Amino acid sequence: KAYTLDIYYAAAYYGAGVTYHYSGNFSKALSNYTMSIHLDPNNCSAYFSRAMVYFKRKKYNPACSDFESAEALGCDRACDYIEKYCRQ
Image (cartoon, rainbow, N blue to C red):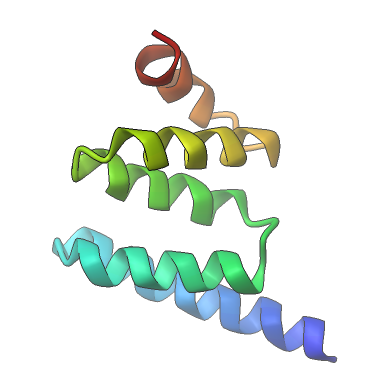
């Protein structure tokens, strides 16, 4: 049951992160994406979205790390960012 709750809360934190992300509140977006990842470390979308926030804030090392995590978890769209910005 605890795992089910973690997944439920992870989705809620991810959703809040998306809302903050698109409203431009990147600090709160990062916080929510990070909590989502903590609760569900297999959520490639949370890694990808957090990477995008890092990227927008010009924090390229953590962005690339998250893009690579997202790719490893099956998030194919991360490949383009890795190739273009992380492997230079």
